[in-house]
Image (cartoon, rainbow, N blue to C red; front, top):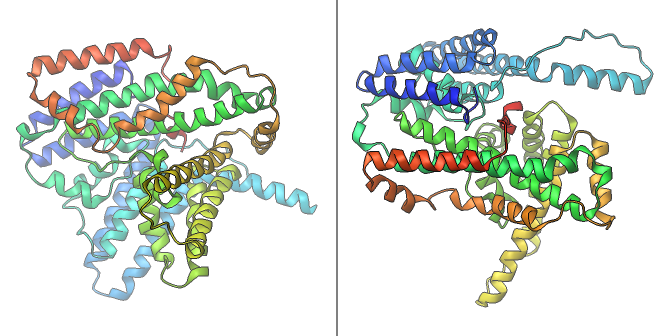
Length: 474
């Protein structure tokens, strides 16, 4: 069930109405939202409902065992077993084929005849996201940062809540569970912020992301050998804008939809392409994932507390695993390795080259602009491996950056579309608060008519068909 479809509009209208009718009865609200979320998830393939139900019951039982078992020494065993089983399920569904094919390739290169069972496994939608949420819940209970959910229904609602179930953001139990325990004032829901998020998300997805894909990205990455340097740059810059518009659009719609249901999520993007450092980029891009990797992987590995070499090792491991999380392919590992290397190099250069502290504003502005350009192009280089179908295609695109043949894609409309995709970052963070406040001041009838008009214009501007969100595959 895709967000920009009539089916989802009808589904959400029913859920919105039922949710607000039950808003004062929190336990019934949780049960209603859980059933709605299971319908939403089962729309793709009902067979995988058993997986998310198992994940729910297993992790909630583990959390309860952590607080009820009288022997503290056993708690660590419970935690490790729980994490191992969660990762085992994720690994089986997402990485089994990858590991088998990698083993076959390694055996072939060594001249070894190896026989491994090969299974055709369908990847459950959203498994990467709800598995990470389940693990963070158990880890937080183990750390005594949060108590277990009051009951299994509340935890199941947290894990399966449909706005962010399929492609995030990765919501912490500490953010979600307290909200479904306390009463909600129906008059205090920020409909203006929700409208801005949802309509802005639809514009970024339906118009910008889809047109960038059709006009620039898909042709270049489908036939990399056919395009010269200018077209490759347009294709790579276009993908940088496309994946931002596409993924931030899903996050915005998810956050806005949850807000209309009385649940507030933290922001997941904040103008990442104006970052002046790679560290700053990861504070702005897919914030829920980068903070998850920091809190549950990088810091437990030792973070930056144990010396320079260990810090560099921890950064590389975190981003190598973060790359592998995105997909069972060595291209994603290379993508993660590039970002890990950027952070290591940036950290080391910061030790050697102190930051400019002079008062010359022009020089400060030029250095800031130069830093933004360096970071943006480093990120774009990594996107080549993220988007290309094969390593050969990625290398062909890099080689063709030296091939200055006549352009086939360059046009005024292509440049305007690309700049529009990058300029959509103005919709992130608190930048649209004035628009949301203005919307809130309007009569409810005016709000409805205005939203319907904007949505009609968006659907009219976008290309035919409904393309899935990019992060559905991760």
